[in-house]
Image (cartoon, rainbow, N blue to C red; front, side, top):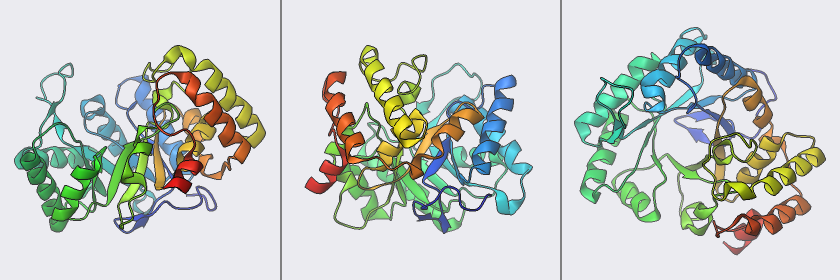
Length: 320
């Protein structure tokens, strides 16, 4: 990988320092020409110095993992990225139209992970993050204990949680250490800022933000309709373009840099559908947002509609 790219590693997870930007693969595994584009996107990310890939078996019903596996097989071992997978949801395997269902029983979890490893063509997972739902505490504890056992056996190198509340995280840590926590954080969804997860005084897990571009809606009017109050986002996109011009960056890099400004956020997983998308956001760790930039954003956010969390990452950090 090129030297001097992706500065400031976020942390060392499972013994490996990771870049502050990781490649999300929710758009992978659709088949046909889309797979060629996804492969090019993955390779472009690696060329840019991004050294970790975030995926989930439910992406393309295993298609994303199979595509990543084909690319990994063509790379020298020393150039292969850190791979974060997910467990907790499964499907019947007979239809790509079914909705994945929560499946956190110990036997099912191990099967999910083993199938993911087979599709990826790797012997052990660098990180397995557990999808959470309204499951019982007993089921959650059994699932978390299973992941810890798999870590002890060497099948898993690190374990994490997706979007836990503080009570769930504390319950998990009483059983065994949590290496990484994934939280949703973007300009249009800042609710995690109201949680103590970002500023716990005790030693805590590496915190990674996902959906930092609001499902693509922040920088593309034609993106998925995942952001609240979609019709009000035009002024925000215009402001991102203005700040991007000031900072000699792309609007997506500005939006991602804003998430990286928050206290406690060590890195971000950013989804990309083509090499140009990942190239645009890869410079986010190098974008230094000024007091003016952050104030302009904070002044605009209330116009988006209902309150979605704190408005200013640095004022929040000072209060915390």
